[in-house]
Length: 336
Image: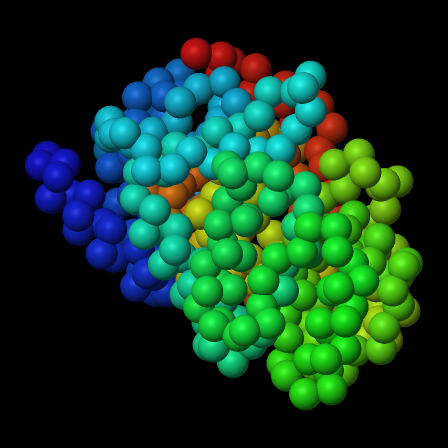
């Protein structure tokens, strides 16, 4: 196979994904990554997978997400344009995502934002990401920075700990009836809600998750109730992504997320990680979360996350929380 031609062709196809061609495109990406990603190929071979017989996403092996902490997960050899790194403490090992083509990431988050929220130029975008702003390796900060630039609104920008200034900006934007997005890490939004409760009519609040030991852990329903009460909102929006992905799913309320066409959530059985479930049934199903992110063309597009979730017949999903270690036993043979 001429891999240079192959990767160029696939790069052009990623954002043409739809319900009709997703399976065939995913299989094509799998074949490319099996051939050009040494770690992923070893993982598939350890599972005795015959790559040539893969015809469906339900047959594709999903790489445990913790491999991003212990291995260099790359498809083809390259000098990374960026290295995204997860947050953590000095006692933890962080995930590292080696990004070959940063334009893939920009295209992914821009297309997804336009799909779910329209033209960024219609918004004033404010980012309350204190713990992330302190790290130059945050993919979330890069996404927010680019969206702020695409918005072009003179009052858009980042806030570290200037909560009083943030309130003043929001009040001014509300007075102007300016459609505003406040994108924030959970603990910072809760701090803001407690210190500066403000009635908002033209502002959408989007939480990105993340307590990082800054506050008592709360379930999503508790977080959203606090934010809705403090800001007199009917719904709080959410973003679901992670360092290991180049795509995002969004929720417009009630914790129900939807993916852009080039991303899909599947579920695996906790006691049998190789058994995959997709939508199509008439009832919701619950299990461990697998993620297909076709934008991860040069790392790995098939990731077994450490979240539990519910998948609904229409393809929307809900994150129920983190898995315990029981899911890992089915992957004990994966040490390379």
